Structure formats: structure tokens, C-alpha cells
Amino acid sequence: MDSVKDFLASMPPEVEPMLAITACDSYEGCILASKLADHLAQTASSSKKQLVCMARNIDKCGRLKKMQNIKLVHVDYDDPNSVAIAIRGIQTVVLVPEIEPQRVEWADRMVDIMAQEDVIRCILISSIGTDAPEKEQLKRFVQTEDKVKGTIQRWTILREGLPFQALFYWVPMMQDIGALGMSIKPDVEFTPLDITNLGDALVSVIFPTTRSDLDHCHQDGFGSGCSADTDGTKLTGNELNTSTSKQDETERFDGQIYTLTGPERVTGPKLVEELNRVLASGSDKGDIEDESSDHQMRDATPITFKQTSRDELRSYLMSLRNRDQDQDEATLRQHFQLRRVPGMSGMLYPFPRATEAALGGRQTECHLTGSVKDLKVPDDPCKCPEYPKKPDVPKDPKEPNDPKEPKKPPPKHRTPHLDPPNDDEVDLILDLLDYIHEGRATFQSGDLEKVAGIRGRGAKDFFEKYARDFRPSHPLKNEDQ
Image (cartoon, rainbow, N blue to C red; front, side, top):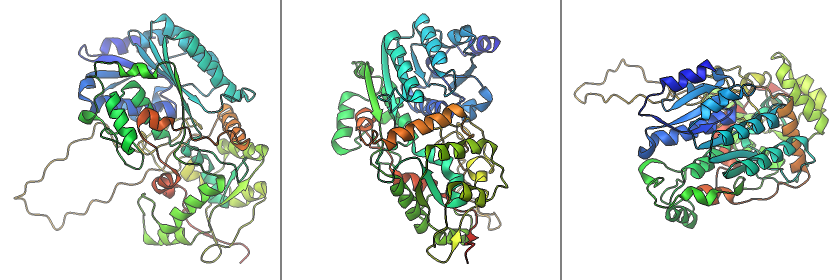
């Protein structure tokens, strides 16, 4: 309670809190908050606006703690007054559900407080699979959607497909035994979404372009307010007309449910095919520490896809939280009954100690809670420099170059850091994969382009960005040699 009062008292009078977002100590909430804050900072009309970020554990808010247009507020859902004070005077709230046993209870309490505090608009982050209420974790999204629709005056729901970044949970398996083991059939199609594109859609819903700008985006694929960058992120700043339109462009999103999917259908084998292609070509965009490691990567045995049972996958995901970094590949191999296959250049096989890469063995600048809904993305808080960036100091042209001055090394690649999933997160992953396995996630909705004017990032672009995190740290010879 005191922290909330201190926050309100310390807020400069010229700064106006205009928007709030929940669960900022979760990965997804942190990434979405970062996207919104970046947009506010880059848009002249919103430069004096402030984003209120609510979190149960502020220590896990990463980059958000350094952003000048963000105020972090500690909230306790068992203390409704702390939530009420945090959103007092704010008209729009982004509700990111907590993937915890109390998820529905906390969300209901949050929505009731929003109504009590006269919050006019709510943007709810939800999930695909709401047409499968027989699955407990997916049913909980339905319950929260119904609560928002029945309580808040203006609402928009963004349902996200399975994120590409969920694959980071499989890094230990792929690096230890060279397989992507999922409880789905090899031929079943689904349309994964890059989580950064969820952030693009959220920005567009809250700060929409004018109608003419959006139509232009649709006509040529990107348009004057959009960019053809690999992540499909729209440009911001003066190129966007977000607040000068006489018509309230946000009204077109009221009462709408958007299912956000990626730009292409993939299968499990297609994912490993794209990953193997990037690894073999060396076309990943991460930095390469030395030529020998790059050569080993190219000669490594390709990753394969394996259909596992739900129980096998549950056992693997649960083991991540207790995984011993000295556990060797034989344990996983015995568990999944896998065999090595010949590589492209001899019998080389990656990668023991993969947990160091997937679960934080490498140093990162922050530490965030992970889940299938809370995953690392290209511009995530743990991969970005301190905000705001310090301006470059121009060098005096009359000053001669110092031949002794060492050449600055390129910035080091920071491996995404995921906390092992808790029980509810494991169940959510399994329910989503069951939904995919049943052939119910094959649709490509087109809603991402409808909302944000972009197609989004596909598997090739994702792996080019992150292949370094799946590549071997060093190869192992085939034990049959």
C-alpha cells in the first residue's frame, strides 16, 4: 500500500498516466509494456504520457525499471485497494492474465476493480483454443473473456497463437539429444506467432493509425505507416497519425475478438527443417564467436522431429525446474528412446549442458518469469541496452585516428533466459499442443494484418534471429563410431 501511495506522490505533475498494464513481472507483460512504452516515447503527441506497470514482484521487471516513461507499482491481488490506487484515474487497462492457479480469481478481482474505478476500456490478452472448454487451461481463458465482456464498457480481445518463442523450452532436448519432441502428429499443421507481433497488434489497437493509413498498409502489404522489416514491426513517430484524427479510431476495435496467427502454416518437421537449414548455412543473424565453432555447427548432426506422448512431454517439461546441469545426454536419450543418426560430415552429435543456454547459464542483464505465454523476443528487456540510449558523441574530424586504439568488438548476443515452467504453465503448453494435435489450429486468420497492417515473422526469420541459441556449444562424436 505504501509503495502505491509513494508512487502517486512522486509522479511529476506534468506527466500524465494514461494507460496501465498488468503482470509486468511476467515475460509477456514485460515485453508488451516495453512495446507500449517505446511507442509513447517515440510519438511526439504522447511524449508526456506515462505507462503504469503493475507487478507482484518488481524485481522481475527487467528493462522496465530503467525506462523513463514507466512507473512500476507493486500490487497484491489479495489487497484490492493496492490495485484500485494503481489504476485510479486511468481509462484504459491492458489485462495480461497470470498463469497461476489463481488466474481466474485474480482476473475477476482485477476486472471488478476496473469497473469500480470507472475504467472505460480493457484490452485482454487471451489465447487460441477458447473453442475447447473441455481443456482446463483453455477454459480459464474463456472464463476471463466472459468476465471482461460482461463488465467493461469497451473491450477488445487479442487471442494469440502458440508463440515461436515457446521453442526455447525445447532447447535442452534439441541440444542434448538432437530432437524436437512434441505431443503432436508430424503432419498436423499450425500457425505459430512471433510474440513481438502480438506487441505490434497491441500498439495498433491502443494507438491506431488513421483509416486511410491502415487501408494503404493493406493494399501494398506494409504501406506508409508500416515497415517490411523481418519482424513486421510498424514504424512509429511522425510517420503515424495516431491522435490527430477527428474520428476516434479506437472505436473500430470495440467489441472485437482477434485471433492472431503467424504468416504461414508449419508442421513439427517443417520447424526442424527450417532450423537445420539456417544452422547448416550459417545464415543466423547472431554473432559467431570463432570460425571453428561455426564449422562444428555446420557439420553437426541435423535435429529431427519426434512425436512423443503427452506424459513423456510432461515429464520433460517438469524436469526443467530440477534439471542438473551435469546431466548428460544419455538420460534424455533413454527417457525418449532416441537413437543417433549419421550427420552430414561424419558422426557428430551435439550438445550436452544445453540447460546453460536455455535456463540461464549465460549471463544476462535481467531475469524474468517464463511460461508459454511469457517468452523471450528479439527486442526483449534482457536483450536491449539501457533505456534511453546515450547519444553518440561525434568525433572531431580534425582529430587523427589513433592506430593504437583497439577496435570495439561487436555486441555480444544475449541468450533468451526462461524460468522453468510451473505446473500451470506446463498444463497450458500441453493443452495447446493437444489442441494442435487434434487439427484445430490449422487456420491462418489474417487478423494480424487486419489489426496492425503486417503479416508477421515466419519460421525462417525467427530461426535466423535465434539460431545461435539452438546451435551446439561443442559437438560430441557418435558413440557408435
